[in-house]
Length: 258
Ligand code: ADP
Ligand code: MG
Image (cartoon, rainbow, N blue to C red; front, top):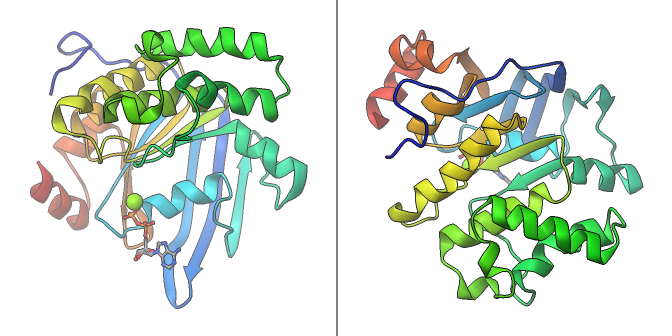
């Protein structure tokens, strides 16, 4: 894969205060104990890459952070406040936590520009003209300013995913969650999406990224979190994790993917 940063350089800044804090989080699906006593702190400006085998609970972890999944035990706080269970506060939480999925989930019958302005206008009550101006700036930032009037189906997968990123950013979230954002893309489109994410990391966005793209992890992550069977097995800087994984489970996983 191509690195947009020069060889040897990384995009890391110094992370700030705790922004997303999970303490002793437990989650079951029926008999399946899918998250087991998860402790995880993501600091402001920090990029945390979550990796691990399929079925280890990575997507569920992301979904608990914006309360798409309720938890059975433990505590999650965002910027010092417990996650609200329902109502207006939950809508506000959702707009504070941007989420980008493997499937782009764009509104098919709305233009690219409308996809990006809808949330700010409806949820944040931003005046339409202002929302459009900001949306155009965001579309420029993700490199598709000239596609604003098209419909999602007229775009490539990589372009659609960049619209999804712009749409999440339009809500001015405190943290962005990415759940395998490049897994559904043809190989030649992966880097255009990773480059946008690397740019966000460089700009200091707080990010939790589930990905198999180890080049991105090496380049952009402050920390790699390795999950297996619903547990955080190991956390380390990318340098430490990739050169000297401590657990047998991480060694085994890395031997299969690297
Ligand atoms: P990952 O993203 O690491 O592949 P997931 O968080 O998607 O893992 O899934 C963890 C486990 O929970 C898997 O065994 C999966 O089958 C199960 N699971 C995920 N979502 C549900 C659900 N809504 N109902 C029941 N089981 C689920
Ligand atoms: Mg998943």
